[in-house]
Every structure is written in C-alpha cells, then in structure tokens.
Image 1: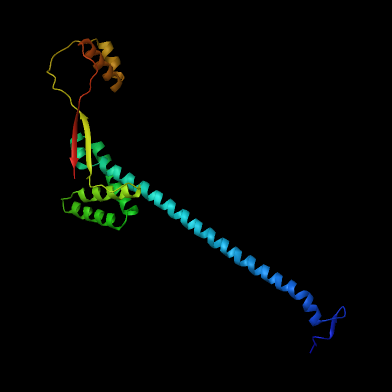
Image 2: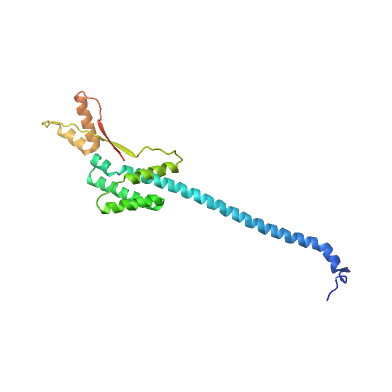
Length: 216
C-alpha cells in the first residue's frame, strides 16, 4: 500500500502531487461537465424553437386551407349554381370542387367543423341537406383565425348574371364573306358583330346585370 507521504514522483509525495494537480483535475472535470450541460441546454432550446416554428407553420397552413375551403363552398352553393344556370359540364366541375372542399375541411378542420361535415354528408345521403350551419361555423372560424372580431352578421352570398332581352325574329341579309370571317373568329367575331350592330342602331355599349342574394 502506497503511503501518502512516501516520495512518488520527482521526490514529491502523493499528497504533495495532489495539492498541485488536484485543482487542475477538478477544473478540467468541471469544464467538461459545464460544456456537456450547456450543449444539452442548447439542443433543448433549439428543439423548442423548431417545435414553435412548426406550430406557427401548421397554423398558417390551416388558416389558408380553411379560407380556401370557405371560398370554394361559397362559390359552389347550390342556390348560386341554380341562379347562374350553368351548363352541365361547368356545374359538374364546380360540384367536384365542392366535394374537394369538404375533404379539405375534414383534413384541416377542428372537431366541431368535422362533426358538421359528417352531419352534412349523412343529410346528403338522406336526400335533404343544408349548408347553413357549416357555412356560418366556418365563417366564424376563419374570422377568428385571422384575428377579426366576433360578429353577429350571418353568411350571405350575392351574384350577378347577364340579362338577355327578348329580341323579335326577323330576316336579314349579310355579306357571306364578312360573316364567314367573323364566324371563324369565334366569340371574338361574335362580339365584333354585336358591337357593329349596336353602333349601326345608334346604341352604346351596355351590359345589364341582375343580382341574386341569399342569407342563412
């Protein structure tokens, strides 16, 4: 067994060596521990920052998707489509957009919105449905997500379509070459022809519209 007072190195005992090297060893150990703890704190702080940024990004995406769904459902309201009297192809296209908006709500909506979508789907299967509750709830959620104050005003839509006046039938002779050229231009040629006729009749350019609104 080595005595603490017995010379060990360079004529110095273990006790004397510890007096010299002890503080150095202690300082080194303390530095290593401090670095380790600091590194752990940095990793933890970095992870918290990443989690915070991820939550902010998720909220931003959710806010944008709910607004997009609201705008799509508004644009494809059944009553609006009936009023616009769209051709079957365009109406089917908007119906598909409406279906995608419901899927979007199921993906990004909160529990109350998802419940309303589920109820609407069940009502649709039963052949009788109304989007009143969903549109109002979605409207309130979108306003809240954008930091807007609460309002008791309810969802409304408004739209316009051209009014075509009844024109009596009559016969008219037109230059075949000019007519063929305008017809080849499609809608653009039709617009030119209409403009020329209005000018010949002494009429200015005018487009009449009729509004339609709905409130839930």
